[in-house]
Image (cartoon, rainbow, N blue to C red):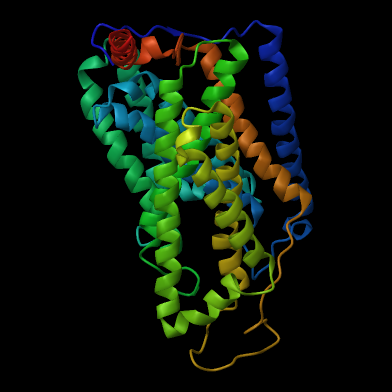
Length: 422
């Protein structure tokens, strides 16, 4: 971006009927999620599909997805500030805001699924530093504080001198946060589907893909709905970047399963996930790999689709679907496979030892998870209507005038060449 280009930020028109219609529609999802939480709180968790064997259900799938996506959404701001890519700097404010809102939505789902939400006070006041869950409480709290400070340095002239330190702190903290989230599963040695060091880097790659997909949907949706200019340059760059990080995610998934197949003691759980007759096999191959992996990879990296809004939006939706399926397979699939209490031996008892556990999510669980997504989106809309998070224009000549100048020069050269031939 040219040094002479000044990006002007403007709030959304919070008084327009269209804004209130959209916010009202989102509020219905939030209300439905709160009602679902009240239903489960009032009747107890026996009304859900969760049991003593499968203690993490669909609310945890949505919560982990949103938490991981929050880290990835912040990566767009980091590219502009840490890696000095000028094209991404105008997107940094929205990137930071989206990261905070997604994390808030994910943690709200976790809080409402506790059954006893007041138990959060115990988690906040009593720490077992040998527990990865205690570490994550500190990581999530620190993320809110650091990203909020990062946004302050971008939006206030008083914070400008601290912009670089805040940018590096936010970048390092988001990597640590995602590493901590992946380590929740990597450190669980009792579950054969978990207990792998690759969980941490795989979750980092997943965060890149999920966060950018949600950012693309928010950006295209807001600028299209409000009639603000959105050029092909920013869409093309984000589209290519999404394709690269999606390919990295698929690579880590491949390495994870090949490593498990190489280990004799992990082949049974791999057969359960990859070739079984359960929902997990369908979700893995059809939704995660096919719909959420290969198809969007083609849409994002095909040379003829560069800058296509429809291709980018469709790919983003498919990545989100595949991401939810991936988190479902990791969390639910890892719990339904029986614990290996005595390696090399068969175990059975009245306590479900050696038995494949069953789990059927209920409507209340799904609605609670969707309500968390609604909370995140509602926070984004309200914040954008109150403060200047959105550039007034993302047209090509505004966000990257050098690129436009090159196109004009190339057109002039082509015209001169044609004139010379004539």
